[in-house]
Image (tube, rainbow, N blue to C red):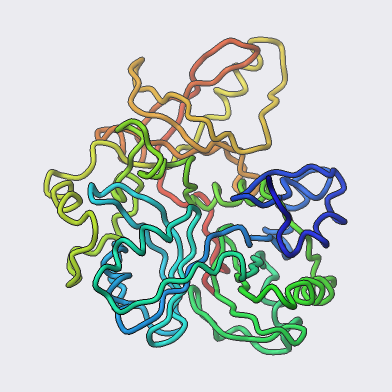
Length: 397
């Protein structure tokens, strides 16, 4: 049975539809407003607050904390400095991705790892023989994502301090409404933003202060639907959508290596640690790379429009992210599948992630995506493009 996060008292007053989704056992609002476009616009043009408390959170401490993380993560964790954050996948022994998340270095020998799926047992299994403590702090840490063009103005108003010196993927301890808040310059929208980590006690005071300070900047609570559209525009992958965790996969084609997900830059074979999955990933690279890879797709609007016109209809595309996989073709033969597909309100394009065969991965390659109108299936042309689809300078400024 789902329960509310510590912010549920505030959220249920704002959720006028009284409709709730589920996220890791917690109630999560799909949308607060009449429609999620209002909330999406808050991300891109003003400031948005997203309750991300359902994320799994682990604190890893001790003399061998970095050794454990370097053993598990594909990135070189010895390079992560205090008050900085890394994003990394972690793999099973076969080099298939179990999950991906952020790792913040809180102190010399103390780290916080966030994950979409439960990962405590995996970390413990890999900690054999190490002097390290692993604590699951998921239920004792509340989290809010403050995202959007004006997010810096809001956090400066809420804290009374200047945040221009906190770089992208940086971190700073702060205080809001008398509550200690650990702030990282991270997020899941592809826009300027921060994530705020705090104890449950006092979390509502932080919420109230953010909305008080953010009122002049158009702050708005944002649900899952708007965040989903924003993360696809930003080409941010989602577990159980772009890939299936190796822990849950029941067929080989459901398992993905970091290379198949386009995360090559996050696999460091030069680091000293022989991380989990390294031999298989090294063999994959030596073989010329994966047989399939996640790419960006721009769908031809004229093709979509033509399919509706065939039935005497104006285009009526869904404003939501379509996550169910659909076939991708090249000259009548299936060469892959499209995962998350959506209309990008800012980029004004229909875009999708496409997991396609090696010979069709190059930008500019012409493919087609299956599309249905009034129960009739057809194909819409698509072009392979570089990702992300949306990458504003303000995200890093």
